[in-house]
Length: 173
Length: 400
Image (cartoon, rainbow over all chains, first blue to last red; front, side, top):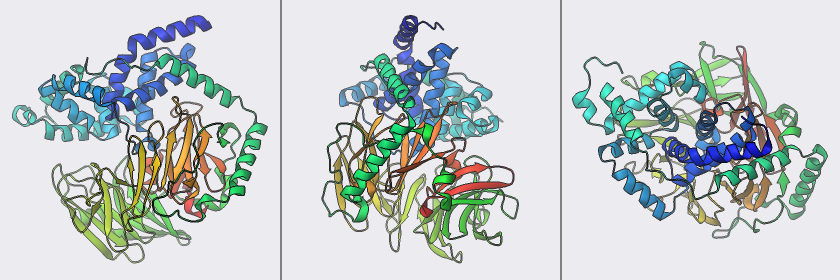
């Protein structure tokens, strides 16, 4: 990463412009809340990233980790926040989500999982992180990751009836 | 869980491309502004911080502690418009450790119960008498005990396996809560879609005080003891009463219990409403840019775009007057009416955490390494300072 101030800002701006949708989407999935809440998480993560830009090798991974940790921190769990999207944006997201058909049911189910389970599922099945990387992101052990994902899948199976019809015999929980 | 489900998950998450669009905010400008503000705060000299604290403390003392008496029903809790300079700037760099600031609140306990199990401290109900819950890893909770520090004995109050012998869930019971300083309550964990129950026992002798059968799928987040019966808030919000577990109390839709008696809070887009479900007392305050943490009868709302200038509003306690605090991080919560915990740089090497006593405008440094959520066991009267192989050191906030 360049150290020069001008290049620093230009590179940071380019990164934000090119990756902000992906980051907001990630935050929207893991936060389980509103679009506004997702943007708050991304804003906070980018603020931290900006201060460390010259020292960060993989800015998107750093931002994802920051979003993840911010989202599962104790104090945010207790916030009981009620952030809401503007009605127009909320309706637009609902419409675009609805267009996904059957996938929308599963996405909605993911977004209603408890915070750690939701995060573990998104990191595993969207970001393709392995147990070790998820454990590092969440600040826990690999065993905890496995049990967290397992519990999440148990809950998701309730929402996804196809799993009972097509489950593979002998698949371990 | 089938592999089909995992395939479906990958496909569904991938399909969300296009659901979320670019932000209308200037995220770059926000990041630069936030970073510069934090750099300025970090560069603050200790003398200035002490001066600001002294001025704020004097100002607070001069107008009287707003928490001396509850405000009458219907009054607006926050008395001033949140503009101008903050009342108090907190500086993690100059914060003294909590062991020095409030030594009377520090408790050192053994690392293990007499039976060798690790445990969470839920509360100190009398001097030297603790309610603790055995644990077996993250979010795995076991039996509940009354632990006497003087002689190191632990008396079982709730046998987790006996209470829920048939569970196939992750753990037989969830995290317990101390209610009203006299009781301890816990929800059994059952298989998906199955009903569970809440057991409430006396800390003094373990006798059952109440048992409530819950509808399938109900997950309790916060409980309260309202004189003679149990209230709770589940994942869907609203306040439930043991008198009618299946439905929320009429008018409580949108409210959630706030961790202090029967007080419930509704965070609206424009208004924060406090409601004592037991007495009917209500208060309202305008929300800030976005309603943020509420706990006890206190809420914190950011007043600027970068959310590092915060307004503390509340009912009855020291938060009863609007105040501003310049913070490097808006991630925080409060315990009761008296304490706010502020996190700076969470998850980063230079992270720090402060405990701020609203009643005296005093603050102290806390360690950041401990997972307080798991360790606190849902009882925010207790914060964990350190845990090692021999002992665990905790802070009893009620002793401050």
